[in-house]
Length: 271
Image (tube, rainbow, N blue to C red):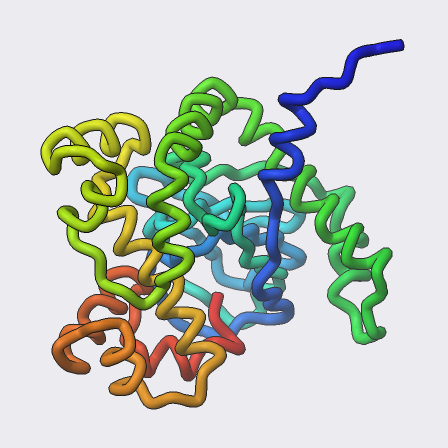
């Protein structure tokens, strides 16, 4: 009998994908440029009569039928949209334990071609009520696209997982107090480390400063509140510890690419 691979079992229990939004259909014309705190997979059915592109920080991608584009969370993308572009856009979290979208798959966007999957996506985005089989099918499609990306970054991700485990007490603190504004001193104290030592070790292990990491997680929580809560923007800004609505609006625009009001109004059509 083969031995159980406990490392693989533990990783399978810790890692998951959580789908948040699915947008389907012909796009409205316009221009957007933003970095969302959530991963996006865009699959193209039909291109617009006018050539459409998505531009990253140092990459340009043609939007052609049968092509897909993966935009990692936090990556700034720019898109000039034209009437007639037909696509599906899936927004999802990559979870490691309870930490959403904190796995740095890549600093780049990825594009590939999979015209054989067009019919699968069209069926899943049809009018009929979805069932459990449809949910599993959609998740399997996401894993299909993520697999080569994750494999390419496997060495880096293994090191990252180790760092996540080392700082797990801090992430538990964030999860238990999602609206608290933690300082670097608070974080270092929780980890029972000196401030300078904590900042240095966190940045080395997570490839991001602790403040940027925390602000990104804070933006994820604020975006969820804007999407699901009936509270006013001022009330939400106070809940998250901002001195006033102006500073909250500036913070949200920095991380979501739009003001809190624009984010809330566009949540059902956001690309």
